[in-house]
Length: 223
Image (cartoon, rainbow, N blue to C red):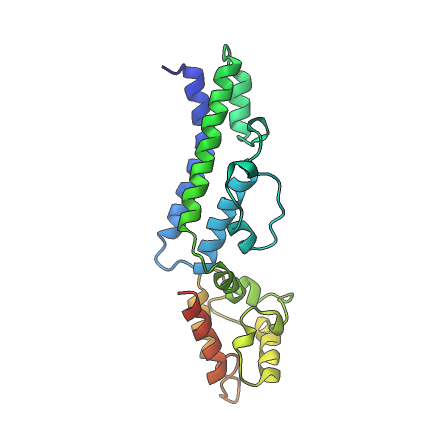
């Protein structure tokens, strides 16, 4: 039977992880969640777990995170695993815990993070490259004055219309007032954009047939 000190250490280890899982669960239960934000949140948590238990690696993209191999040869030595500050403080303050018991606790906690990582990975979609492109349609990217050039957008190759006009519209979109400018309302934002007209009542910004087709194709490719 575990002593109270060991139970306390396990509790301190689990507390921040469970809190983050609960936070993610609430985001996924929103009435109209932003798909790109959901994936970003889940991948960020997944990456944080990998960085706690896996050998150091520089992740340049979502695809890099997805391709990380969770086999034993890619895991950190047990004493190099990041068990969290609450775990370390509780372990420091505990009395009478043997080295053997400490190693057993660390092994169980490491294995928990490893299994959790594997379960999250199972729930991540394989078409991650296409889904990663969705983040460029979020308001924080689209309405930023430092947004990427239109030809740097990963779905630009789908565009078949007037490139010059599309580029000008992309340049000025952040200078206009929008009712749905905050992240979390991406679909509402692009509905508003598609309905926008200038002072001469001429359709503007992603309203043309070819431009809206780009968005439609991108949405189909990620479904």
